[in-house]
Length: 114
Length: 115
Image (cartoon, rainbow over all chains, first blue to last red):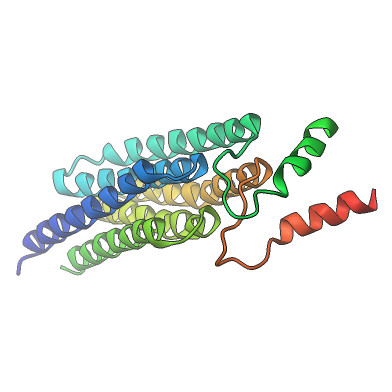
């Protein structure tokens, strides 16, 4: 097998594996069940997209794609930080299962302190 | 030939890491355990593929850029995961049943009790 054919086969294989990973991550975004879960899945989606871009850089030979991948990583990081601040500011977990009875009192105390 | 083999192996292994992270994201029981999969395996997966792209270019400048990108992801992924976990914990998202112990909540309660 020639080197070019090997790289081309590996490119196709990794693109299909990445597509599967993409679909699984989108499933988590759709299903949730909570907002932080979706934010985490979006972060993971950005990481998978960076991998996609890197594989496409190998496939097409345009090395400029590496810069695009770095820029996407920066944007993904900032988006996650902003979403974390948003979750912190919104401050309530309406979908909290399990130990719900202990929640209201604890949170009221926290808010008064703030 | 060696370069082609290295690029192919790095790409496929990186894609498999991403797939493992995605499977973990779907299969694990709660936010805090899903974070393990997404922020560790996901970062390594995309980083390996970036290094593969840098190697394939055959140019030291491109390889250095790809390595800088990898280091950047390794630096930022734990920060993002830590911020998200902290925000979710403070917003009141609790650990789910398979987890047995919440050290952060216990230490906060202890702290509040001693004040």
